Image (tube, rainbow, N blue to C red; front, top):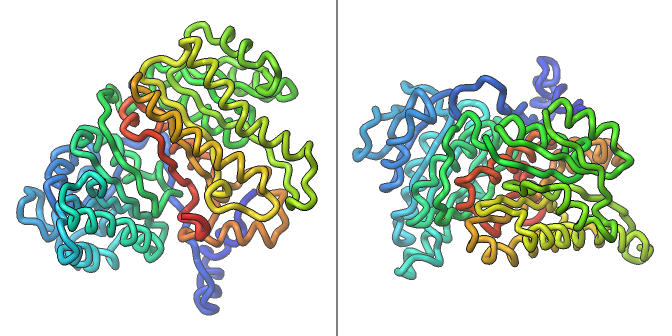
Length: 450
């Protein structure tokens, strides 16, 4: 379903009207298009500590235009307010900030740049994990970056985003993959997020097809977000197996044929589902995406046992049972990437969704609990938590709730299935093992949750 307000607010007449009335005017977001050559199409401006020099060394692979600002240690030409191009991306390395007094460098870097940003610009702040610092004062300064970055995300306008990456000392070689995602339109609906990059030995060999040669399974793949995930993984080179319930066989077969993949009709809650799945994957998996899920909404006072049990069985128990079976059968290859589809409801809760929120919070716990075990095999597991995404399900919501879901975020609009799919495709890359046991919200910095 299209967002009519978004279209009207950005029309010639609508722009004048909403501005006159003081109404919000969300900007149309730029999303990744086939044939794009670089993550950043426009000027990249760098500044800050030593990681900025590392980013400068890979900048030619990110953009055709790189500038420095307030940093004499960089070789790139200096960006000058009023004379330089409108920045499409900013990277500030705050990893060397060692006490609260040095936090002023954040203001000194960003304040002169913010009014000059190009539409749909992407801002990334780099830091060090606060718990890994030896000096308590440095830990305080690094933790302060979270409050700053989330506030910055809420102040940005015109479709811009801001995110924070804590980079461990042994993860610096994975910066390129993370920046290729967070500085590009692939992260269009992600803002105000904080992730930590840890050690990972794997590297992407070909950035045009980062998943080439990897086998992927997507559950709930017949339509909606699941179909978008399968399409995006296939676009990036993965061989995809699409799983959904037998009732979705026609849609499943059609999508599998279009993607050159394989369809697998299976009820994931069946008593023998794990056995069937193991037998259906003789060559094992490099990528596993647990997308299948259902809702059965009622307030807890009116919740039937059938509604409760169905949601917990599909959304939470089945992913655990199937993952355990694949792991024990040796079907998850070393270096495998597992992604669980959680939800902002699992973080913030939602009225009438006690069962759904419990299941999605459980998936976050599942990722955290399994991360250490999988790390021993070079594998990783993470949760992606979508916010309001434009799907058939949200189109059926009452108009008031639907509009509230769209507008109550920093970007002032709903996301698209593609936004969720791009996040999962990035987490499925070999180098994204640097992220493990974490939650990435794809919600436009929704104003609920953390």
